[in-house]
Image (cartoon, rainbow, N blue to C red):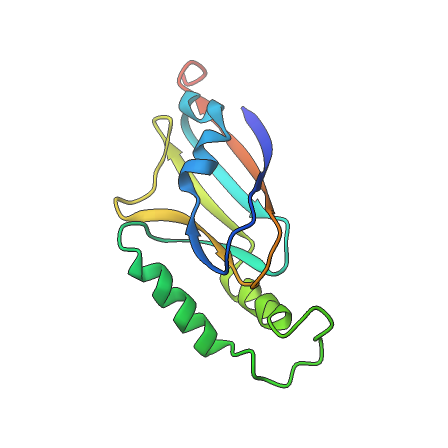
Length: 144
């Protein structure tokens, strides 16, 4: 079985935001999949996706601190037409990645106990972000 959904998340402030529940709500077919994969892809170049700790909100703050240290806005960027946070946002998005692949087991995402899907918003004033969710797998009724 294959299924694909596109969702647009509301604009979020700069930072790291858990979006696991929004992703799961957008794919009702997930419950039918015994074994499969979910690809979550972001259609933007200044935000990214990652999987990391979902329990302690300090992790999200520390991610922002570390990425700002690794990719400061103070470098002499040439691409500055969209503001001083734009080119650093592109670099951070390339470093973090535009998609995550998650195994599915028994109708659920097979994330670890402390894992969640993050939208990494790298712009100060971003618009909503569009994700393409592609589900592939076998339902329990088609497994023989």
